[in-house]
Length: 348
Image 1: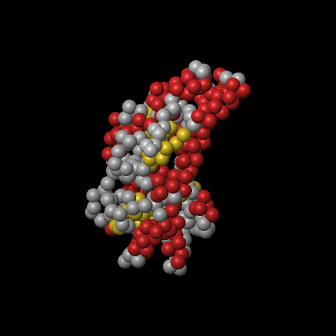
Image 2 (image 1 turned 90 degrees about the vertical axis):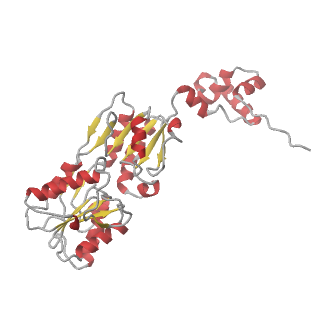
């Protein structure tokens, strides 16, 4: 015996069965203030018995022109970004504001080939860091949606940044005052390699959009200012801000023919990994090697020696990015940073 085909219930068909208007059924689900509590409970109970879960929210969103969802485009895979304490602080700021607006967040990998599969289901995008797939930057630039970028810029779109070059210059100035100092820069994704390696003469990637290059510019400005020199032999590209990759760069630098006097690190995680390697070799921080980081994570304060760093107030950056998403016109916002001088660079 053939199986009876189940009839799909619609708002209109349910209203007919219950002998009420379409608006009454819709209000029971979406606008409870329009019905008495008793009437709403009657409608919802009857719908449940019929097996009707309510109006199609996707269709409703398309009719209204908004979904109540913001797409958060990440610079990399969610797994990598979610393990990063700086990204977590940023997310706290974003979600704190969006919750007040009753708006949901959709995480989107910066590695995916296109935004076409999600663009119709979100009200717009907040993009945290330049996506690893640069094609997404072009799509964000052309999207007929609200877009806010963080830690990079797209012309005509709102953005939230700190002055990365100036911050890097200032933190470098706190430890570099002599042309004779030997400096090692532990950079973040400066060249196209999935391995930790020296930059050498390799082509730099993402020069236009990457904050890593703005930080590199700031470091080099200070080194040149004091009459020093540095080549690609003393600049490392680390593919991810993680202890695993950073320790390899630190070990290689520490075992160089001329050991560095200073480590300029593009993240606190990189700096803490380098400091652990220095201490394990029996060297002293900062007496033998001065180390500075970038970000201002809590672990840097708790570590001994405590870490000199750039505090960039990531939670506030997230809050500001979410605020700008709801503004009517594009705005470029430069948020503050603070140089925190601690034990890793200052001899007590």
